[in-house]
Image (cartoon, rainbow, N blue to C red; front, side):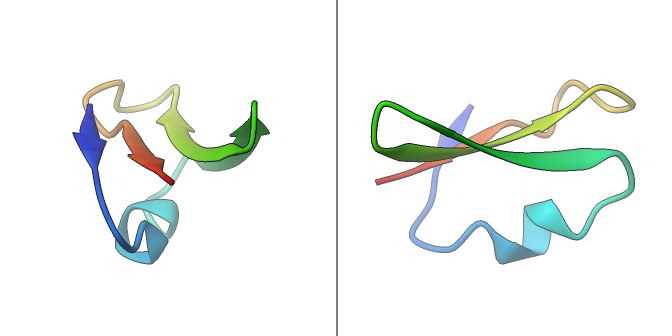
Length: 40
């Protein structure tokens, strides 16, 4: 998982979802599980 200042580019990938957990923003992707990122 990458920690990024902006996760917009990963959030545009097909199958991506933006999830908020514990005050942090995560990008998770079921289609391509390598695309995981955290912001904040």
